[in-house]
Image 1 (cartoon, rainbow, N blue to C red):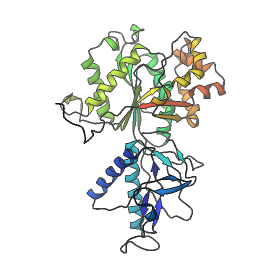
Image 2 (image 1 turned 90 degrees about the horizontal axis):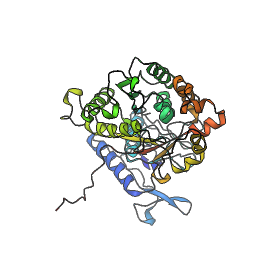
Image 3 (image 1 turned 90 degrees about the vertical axis):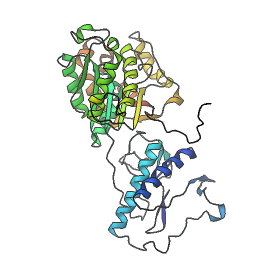
Image 4 (image 1 turned 60 degrees about the vertical axis):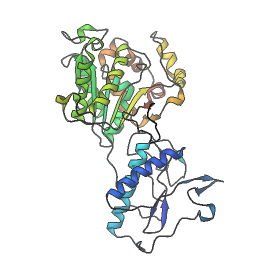
Length: 398
């Protein structure tokens, strides 16, 4: 909750099932506000007996405090409104960094964020899927909308981006964010690269960025270049660091440790290279000639939970492919991408070479609309913080 001094009201901003992330988020917010010589009143609230209860004061003082005598009364000035919006913006940024949930004032029910790393959450109480909670009845609020975070995806082959993260790419692009895709394999002059360019146009992303290594199973994909997994590790990490520092994304997405459902060896290697590159990109003495250091705020791994076997299993069984999934409780966020499903499917089908040879895009082409929604309407991710916070209670090794 955060307090609006202008009218003495409290507004629900976000919630978490755990107290430590809330304290962390409030600490981030308070530090930012104090650095600007601003002030804010906050409190910890939670459900009790079907009502909201304030937990950081004794029960007999559970009522919200009255505004201080210096607080403005009545209609807030434009400056006060801007400051209220700024406090809400800082609060939401801190809560987003802690990976919390939204709470719609209209329903007072928690809803899982549709994209856990985004600073523009989608709220349950908004019929339009507005990125901000709807104002409470009679409230005069003027929140400052925050821009959608820039997004970079790093995948092994052309078409992986559309299958694994096409919905999130389209979603962020629709919100006005810059989106980019780095692809590890295939030469920029190849037919697959042209198909990738068409897919990215459909998804609203920047032009393709291909590292130009050869697909491990298709040597002719990049004549004269080594297979991606055979190239020197320092070289491939450096090439990706240069892309990260050039794009400067807030969020990076790549394959999970299994390499996705199929476990392709190029997927696994892309995962490993990306983890190293995301960390190295923020260190000024590593790859100093690859641009100014830049540390992405969040790293997400595209994956599938065990429960997806019921949906995908029958389809992949036809191709003889094994399935590599993770426990459902490992999933950080499940993104409903059905509003962007038409774009996602069109991007998948833009990879015509893969459609013709009967790869997964060809499987998608043969499905009905309902089957496509069932298979592609949700994208699952595991958050892997590139620089995890260090506990102040950590003891040095003896």
